[in-house]
Image (cartoon, rainbow, N blue to C red):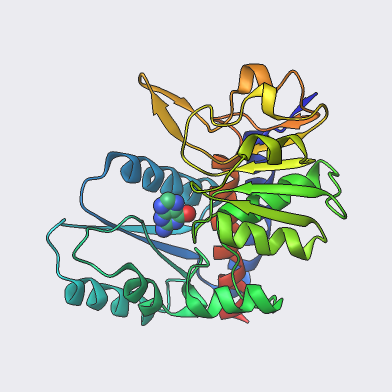
Length: 282
Ligand code: GUN
């Protein structure tokens, strides 16, 4: 059994990006820049944003955090985005989700210039992913999972893959990227019947349901590859959607939580920001 080390892989990616950026900025005369907007005081969002800013520092990018009050109007939030769209020193714009209920998330995401949407959530980038146009940005979490498969030489062609969760951020784009790898994909949601039976038939499981210990050892087959995208807090301790201690005894490859998919999501955000920077300085 191999534990897929997302932390180490993310560090390797940061080093590569830092080297490329150090070279490019000499010619470009400016650093890459990422702007992160956070609305309100969601504690998990604050931690994610802090980690994203730290990653920028690690690779030498400029970063800017825009903290806005929970009560901000959608109109004023859109004005902030417009300023960043027009700022030539900003290559990537990210609005941390979720947003307060009075704000329409889709309107906000689509107000970000598609050329600066390093989260890969803009309708244009989703369309490009769907059609296989590689000039766009891929959503960071599924892109990070694909990078893990590639680094560990896990071939997906012809494999039966079960994706648990159908969110816009993970489940849906994950499915598209797996299809591109020629996997046979089945997508489950909270209404799915006989999840256990489906798990037993799967070669690869991507769990993104937000439900602790949803995937149990008795449900999976020997040699299964397990990717745990869940980030849950149980009794103050972080855990994923997979019962890691037990499932790891049957798996061939498994990601831990923390230290698995989470760091890869941030690595892909930084990679997307470098891609945007390259497109803009050329
Ligand atoms: N909230 C949870 N995951 C993400 C993410 O990848 N990007 C943004 N912007 N918000 C999130």
